[in-house]
Image 1 (cartoon, rainbow, N blue to C red):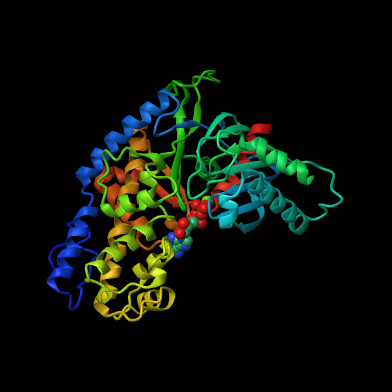
Image 2 (image 1 turned 180 degrees about the horizontal axis):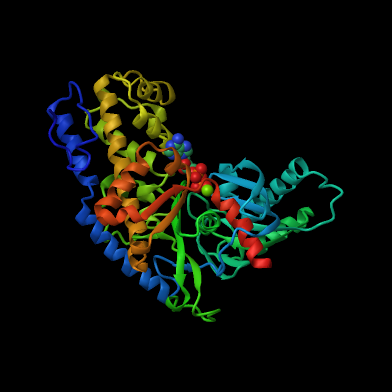
Length: 468
Ligand code: ADP
Ligand code: MG
């Protein structure tokens, strides 16, 4: 038997065949650094609840708690046709939704990939590209577009931190998830998009701006009235929930103090001071080399953009200590972000005795000349360690929102979108295990479901609520 790695992953790990004591103790040490006991999760939750209070009180706080200005909730009776744009980080989705009442929605949509050049060029180039995609989408997918004289109402899901001042106004606070477009921070993103649409002559008016979490929350509410939180585990991570307006102390003009407003938490920025979440040298390396050091620390430990890079940092460390691949890396593996989170999914899902899919990833995709079964088992263990911490850490902000609002007793539904949640093996099971440890039997009152692509429908719903 290998030494006990960590109380938490004990049940999941398999025997590493033929490993030396040096290999086992190195892995054991790393597993301990990534371990999050339930006591630690509780400490993090307590700290985060306090951060939420600070964000509700003042603008510019680390956990920004951004008012969305969405105060209504959909009833399911809405009718009409709306466009939606969803800029998530990896793709741009353009959609048309037709609401037919009785909760029925028909949709057309198309995804356009965002290139590195678009992520790092000028803001004007990015928004011109978006306007081009809308134009192409309308021409290709919307019948009678060319003869049509109507002006489309559009909801815009923009998944970056925005300081919103109205449902259709919001300035970009800062880019995240690898975006660095110039001339766009501190500017109104609705204005920039509308200008680009006008330049291109696209007949669309941007009537609502929402974060993807807000969109996910709205679309899930449309299906399930008990929905309280909308969450993203995709390129990045974030959440939104219904807050009592009377508690949003920083609002200047209070619309109706008795009602509720959706708050976009911006929890990706949590613990950017590195005070409460145990941080490892592998996280610090990633942070230092990232294009936004000292920010989005919580997101960097959890989301799809970063998990592969954390795992790569551990793998390189083991190679440098001659504990893996006989001390040899490859050109590909040496390149930043070459070990994709998607590879971790393949490796974690690899149930074959000889880890054949893992071999393919390492030897064919990453060009490691040859690997032993022990090497592959170690790599799988590394993925488990990183993936498990991500899922357990994810439970903290989710639980904190529920605890902060004292809603668990009445039952809450949580709608979650994002490829990581949808496709990463065991992510949802590990998250649920952590929540059960935290809530005990009350966990039965928390209903978690996948809300696939909810952010698009949500933006269209927001456009409808805004123009009602
Ligand atoms: P966005 O957050 O941009 O809206 P997604 O929800 O699709 O987009 O998430 C994209 C992220 O998911 C990328 O960072 C990518 O690394 C990650 N990803 C893609 N495929 C997989 C997979 N099979 N398993 C885990 N993560 C994946
Ligand atoms: Mg998305």
